[in-house]
Amino acid sequence: MIKQVSSQVEVALGRALMSETQQELFSLDSLAGLDQQVFFLKAYPVATFTDLRSDYFRTFASGSIVAVSLYNANLVDGIVTVDRTTLDRGVDVVQVNYDGGMSTSTAEFKTSYPDLWQAATMQVAFLYESRKRLGQKGVVGKDGSVTLMDPMKFLPPLQEAVARHKRMVLAI
Image 1 (tube, helix red, strand yellow):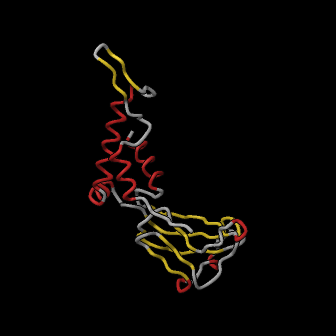
Image 2: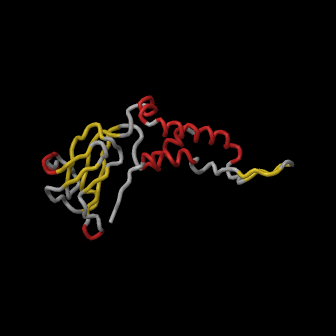
Image 3: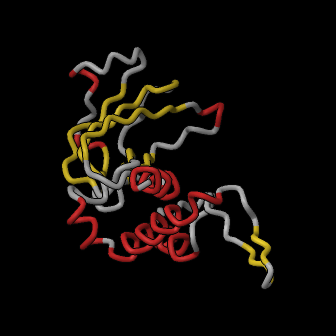
């Protein structure tokens, strides 16, 4: 259940919880509206930024490495902005290699994100207590009825914690 909730939280946040080596591919296609050269990395903050590569043929050899002077990498927010060159266009033609994520260990995560940790712990306990009544919406007994929360949805404290730590992307 812990892994299940962790996975669901990771998806809801749109970012990696644990820091690990990442290799992300991005597409650039002006016809599909993907002409931007701003890349939002899924695992941030970034601990180590290795390189950014642009290769129309998708081999990503050492010759495809984009010079550091041609882009800006915001390691805290995991945003790479390429504004001093034009990258190759196509599907999966940009590769970003880095190490990143919210924390390097469970202990560090608990210390750095106590609200998220506590809310996720409550969610796990709720799932455990709800395991025998999955799919039930209510219980009727001789003393009345009770409406149950859907165990497939996040509890309000976890919804609020996820909202606080989720990346906001404003688009025009």
